[in-house]
Image: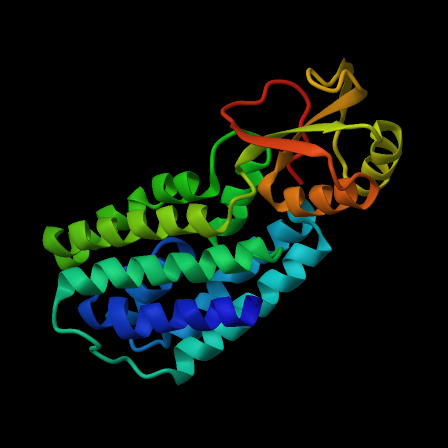
Length: 264
């Protein structure tokens, strides 16, 4: 999936953004800028510029994410090198819209499967894990400097198209990569103790349990409440159903979490 995400990003760059000199977000955008202004290959520049941030990612994000990020950086640089730069459309607005959105799908896919596309993604994930700010919003904010550079070098029309592309990339990242979205799960069951034990063994989350009873049946029940990320809901539902097929599960989005909540 990381390799597929890299291919999607390279496709967005070489078929939509680079032909119109629209910059992408992060280090890749800087690589595109230098590649347009110099004879250096964009793929090679993307790899070299990511080396310092890969080292940072190893110490801050762990071995697995760093290895997946290295795979992404290498494969993305390779795909940028071998894919031709093609004008898939002669409309710069369509290029900015589809290039930004498709790049966001690729980056979000990589993040969803424990990786990053390198560059500012690493910094955004580190900040997001210590705050309630989404990765996409952080990337959009940090890429303001790229918009300014684009406007100074290529003109402000291109800068505005770059801004549109970067904004759409950030929105698509948040649509695909949803670990920043918190959900509250309420589980009403007659098998509360068995479910509690397996959840604590399998899911790194706290559980609050209250006693209740059915309003119609007057049967004693346990109500388990957990705040989780969207990725964890499927596994939790499978655990609950394995013990109580009739359990009632209520899931709703949590606006904000105060207190200890593991984001890893």
